[in-house]
Length: 197
Image 1 (cartoon, rainbow, N blue to C red):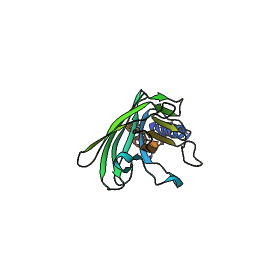
Image 2: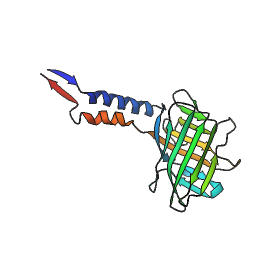
Image 3: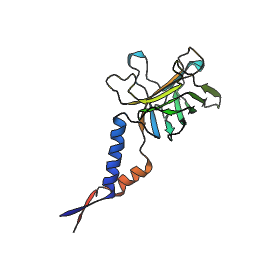
Image 4: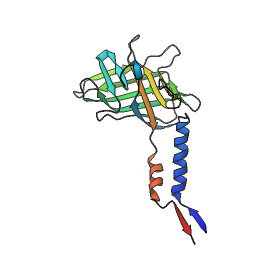
């Protein structure tokens, strides 16, 4: 008997390769769903802390959904909705990272960032990235930062002005497969291999 490989097999292989690469600590261009970082004994999980307005935000609880998009170029964007953990309302965020430089295949660093937070009453808070001692304002690396026993999860961490504050981003991330890949996976349905007579 001879078998013909359906297009779904190729799509499965592609998706497996993408997921394996991501699990192996490789970050490339794409859209990443952000999740609150497990902060362990250092405090509660969160995605964004802005002490200037006394707010701690979740990027994925209470209906919030935030993504990081990077096309491989010199900028990346964090955008979506945030859940204010104190007031339990939903805010919007738009934050552009600039001076983005790839770090091998493990992600990127950015030297600056600027953006806004908007509350439900349309009040706007401006956010500006702050460089650390190495000249970095944001790291997006597959290094499992502050996740004991995990050295490959992608973690985004960045600092915000004013100086000497604890205002910062701290998120985990997972790659969202491209719609074309998902379409290929479902095109063949359960019929992955068919017999050829």
